[in-house]
Image 1: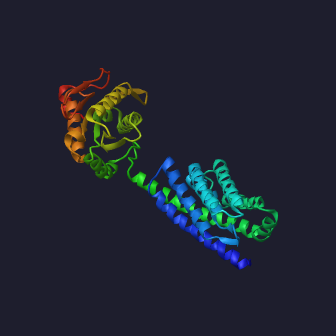
Image 2: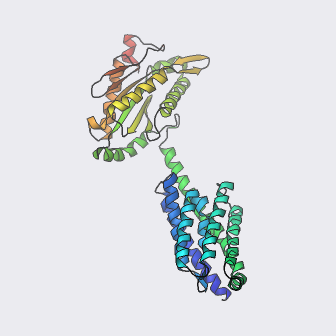
Image 3: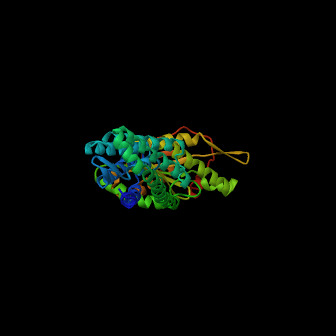
Length: 383
């Protein structure tokens, strides 16, 4: 087998690996996380390795060479350990199915490549530079030694002809494809960061109104399928007095602390949004009005027991909350938010530091807490 045939075969196989890079970018845009990302990435790398074996360099009957190792060693750095397990299993199963005198060596090489990938992941994990990819590719290339699991005469003939080009192309291929995949990942991460920044309030670090607008269609579709959601609208009591007494920087500190408490007392699936000024909204999927009212009451109690230290002064803080649910006000987010907002203002009119639901305006009293108080006249003027 001449050098040109070997080089052409490896380049053809690496071309397939480049297509994996583009597919990987599309996969990232699906915004999968955790196990789902691992399974999907594993399927991608595994089936790509299968495709590589379907168009290999045939050294002799049952002995094939291709770019499968490049794909498997990159699976953990790009998709995590689950991706390596899935990808290696798929590729090894296909190689075993192909059979031939090189089947045992081929399967063993894939398993060894998977181990190399996992070791790299646990050793470097986020290191994705040329040097690290070069080490990874060279380590993957030494899987050529599994060829000695074949009968010795055939193994020696294959090793003498293929060892150098195999190690070289596996090393260079891992560098090139690894850099390409890394660029795709970084491009995706940068786009995600920009999107997150556009949806995040700079002061409180919770979401802003833009995020709420983007959630509207998703929530309305869920509600149309009888998957209710609820909205809690919080408003800091006497916030204007805090600003007037201690300054706007103190008001910012109070608002930030309230946002932190609300975020800490809600689920990961809930969305905390700075709705405007001192108002903070919480969107709770799969929650009815009663459940949301319970959450709101717990948050009120936590906030009422918190004081914000500002320049030697302890600023007592309370909030009022209104609760509404899509089951009572229709699927439209605008309508549910408006109902929660009206309930919140009713809570303020009834004395503040309390929760009211939109359907009944029933007050859920919380324990009295010393704090900034307003006169009856001030109640109408202050927020």
